[in-house]
Length: 399
Ligand SMILES: Nc1ncnc2c1ncn2[C@@H]1O[C@H](COP(=O)(O)OP(=O)(O)OP(=O)(O)O)[C@@H](O)[C@H]1O
Ligand SMILES: [Mg+2]
Image (cartoon, rainbow, N blue to C red):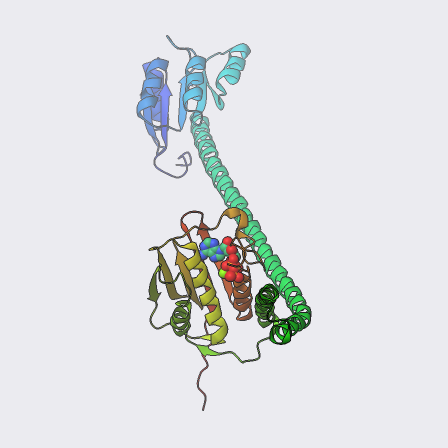
């Protein structure tokens, strides 16, 4: 009983000897173990058997007709390296043992005639050694897998930190640009007022009969008015909102903006499609500012689209946020300028067609409302601007 190999009944042994009575005696000794026992009368037959059945331990005679024990065990080692090899020796010389160790890496030697207890102990140790090797390998594989996961999640984490940092730097940069633009606009507003006032004075009281002078004064006035529009835009952005934020329906903002955006000359050429989610929760904000964002986004989409192309105006909710999307199938935005489009005065449009303030103002309004404005775009395929806002907190009614 004491000699039973531990554990699973699926332990199997191959005994190889060219003497049938040795095989029979070995079998008898191992009868009381729970091992499945296979036998072979030559090295060649032993290799055949191993092809067919799986064993954990091979016990082989040293000197056999045909393939000798060292060669047989070496083949076993090459093909099934985990299988534990035990050599049975008669009066093997030291040289033969050395050869067996070096070439076949045998795990144990057993002398003929063997001691039964020792044979059983050797089988047990060989089986345990086999299990150890297999479980070690499994452990190593698991370790490698965990390591890989760890490296991956580390990379993920680093990427997330980088993205957050980039977003923070971008937000800070935009805020600084906003302050600067507001300051410049403020400084320019006074002298601009002077230019406009004196131009208008000259137009009224000046040498009105000289057409060339009149035309020049008209041009000065047009340009100055345009400058004032720009300055007003910047100032409206830089100024802190005076109004308090109220609960607002984003769908209402979207439909109102759509009506106003119809004034844009390109609006009739595009096919605007509304996909407004019903039951959208309200957001907190100023309707006029939110409208301004949607109008700007729609105008950009109209300008980027070819006649007949569709522009989608979508609203939906996801988690704690409400989203408004303007998607066009127009020219798209190249990778190289995508980081700049939210900066003030960045425009790719003709002089007079765009000031490059639209998205800058939209972005500022989004941040001011605790939201964000993002873009996804592919050159030649279109763009999608995603305006996200936190939904208004639900205030529980208290008596
Ligand atoms: N839907 C869009 N498709 C392609 N490019 C766009 C789109 N929206 C914005 N852009 C690019 O971003 C730039 C900046 O846009 P932004 O709205 O800030 O300024 P603008 O439209 O050029 O001028 P403004 O809005 O002040 O009249 C645009 O010039 C354009 O290159
Ligand atoms: Mg614009």
